[in-house]
Amino acid sequence: MEPKLERILIAVDSGPSSDAAVERGLSLATDDGAEVIFVHVVAIPGEHFVGGGHNPDRVPERGQTRSLLDTREKADEAGVKSRGELLVGYPPKQIAGLADELDVDLVIVGARRLTGIKRFVLSSTSRALVGETDRPVLVVTEPAPVAAHT
Image 1 (cartoon, rainbow, N blue to C red):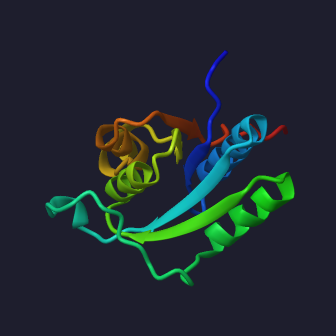
Image 2: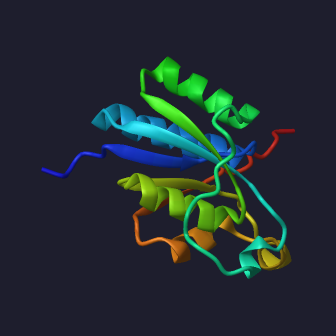
């Protein structure tokens, strides 16, 4: 018998890959009766070049974003216990620090479908997160575009 998940950390923003990550995370949480912690990180440009600790930089408890409020509502509708964390800094480092602090069993993050030069130029939170943490990370890609029928 596989061990059950107790705490799942899901990184959220306002994109379709985030929606897919939330959907997958809530499904897993429902199956195992796990608590979900949603995290949204407000990025600070250049922060990843600065050394420092591995502790999450929290916004005061009342600080929430639309993406956190919406995902908490989805969790309530699914009957999943949840809470939200709003952090500031370099997203991969902040997410990894929170995952360690809360001793989560799984981190779920969305990934955009980028190819070629866009993939090279734009940073990948999911790829960097895998390098920042030793915890299991599930990367959920956004749904593939559906071709229009003519």
